[in-house]
Image 1 (tube, one colour):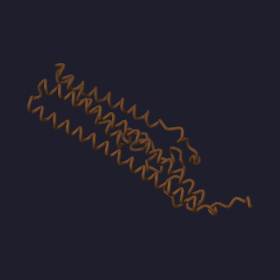
Image 2: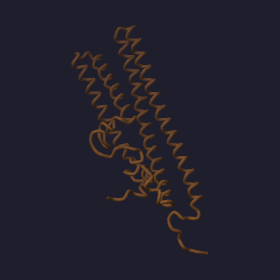
Image 3: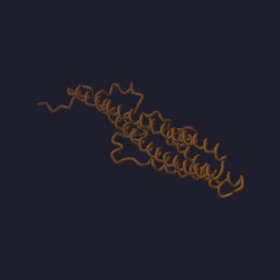
Image 4: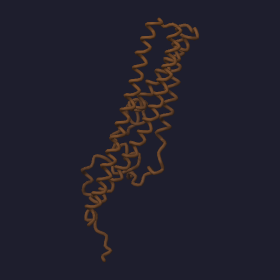
Length: 229
């Protein structure tokens, strides 16, 4: 039996390997599609609850003329909205980590494709490397820092968790203003209470999101890192 290693692109078992790799690739694509579907479903559910709460509060306000009953009902309902919002943001962060996992898996498969047929490398616009740089290249995220680039606050607010975090923070700000109003604070005191609650919520949720991004499973440790320039 010959022990010679066939040259790249001439593996006699390449066809079977390609079939296995393609099957796994399609499986990851389908799973990634389900991840997107759940993300959008969660966002729609939160926005529906938020819209329903606002409509219900408008009806209560008409009946109570922004009296004590309205304030009590508004604080309670908005607290429920905040709970749903925080749970939604948490789930979206988990789904984003899952999406990153699927991208890393597809990059590893793409690396295997190129091992079998390295001559196809010029035709790929996505990355065959499974480190962070390779993953975000496949995801089409701008890697430069600043403005809308990766790591900027503006880019963070463009993501689904970032966008919903700002909305949840706004609801928390409304609760803070209602509490200030119920405590008999003057108008400027109500505005300060609402603004302070909003700012604190944005900072805390931003810190939570930045910590969550760095939590990767050990199984995602790079096996095929990008070449250093």
